[in-house]
Image (cartoon, rainbow, N blue to C red; front, side):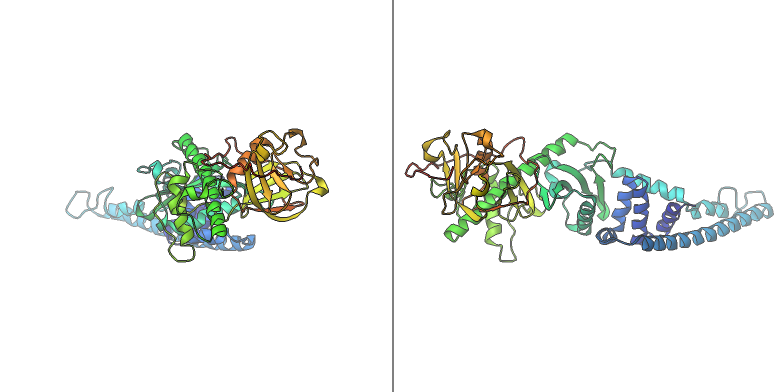
Length: 472
């Protein structure tokens, strides 16, 4: 009998042994049977979470697995002896008892003879049970689950991180929503890349009796076609874009508080005319999310950070109503590869190509002071259609009328960007955003969405009263 068969026999007889379920899941995983593996990992509960976070030496695994196999093998021998004894007893009873169906007589197919199939607990029966349970995990979404009940979250897409993420979710299954979808972020060096096309990796659906079904949505692991795959992908794309809106709003609220000492009462306070234009403009997703996000910041130093979540917003569709980007946005410029990134913590949201000035572009820490539309009254002048001054200096991040200078050292020290990139950056980052100019630290890979982030400007953000002399 194979180790897998022994383990199946063991967990059938000892269904409460979570380590047994975990080891059986590993056996299924190694043989490429992901549906059965996920079912076993779900049964393993907190053992799955604990052991997936650690690198357990192979000899420890083998010792534990062999011990379970020995126990199951010994149990099989005892059961076989018992079955033989029962069959033998049944045979002699059938010979010695009268053939007439007198009251109390044992006829074929009843009495002691029927005990044998009741005792039989073979690995084939266990395999059938697991097969039936595992097949349920390849149906998504579950009956009764509606799109409005799906909550999204994101994590590093590496197998180790995903295992930890799913294990953490399973450990708190009592507080999980009806359906949770985990999206995967690619890793580049120390950065996690936020893409508008993050892939759906796992889905967790609550069922009756405290069960949570875990389904892999990765085509490499699951060859099934999830129900309403196109609809789920559309929801995931809308959610990832909505998280960027929340990041802009959250950063703008924090920037406003740093400037004025308190939070704004409404969105209009963030989008005033120059020079009070903390935020470029308003998007549709910000309107219903503003009260909840403002309350979270206001209650950040208390135990109560809950708020009513408006249905249909990116905040309401997030797991626990928590935005993905809680740290304010900041800008990093890498002189070594002509890149400018917008990041929150260790998550990179954008990575643009820029033009620089070599040694004329200083390294150091700054923040965006003036944010100006059409610097010096022109949209096609030296500074393009947008300019963001760096602290109290003559350096700025701005557009250019020389697009061929991007990825070259042709400026007198400023950071040049293409028209599409600088206008998106202007809409993304509020006044007061920290800017770090350094050598190294960013990947070469560009990170820009197919559909750019935009917002509706509601005030005049030009500055006709000043001629800027940035070091173009």
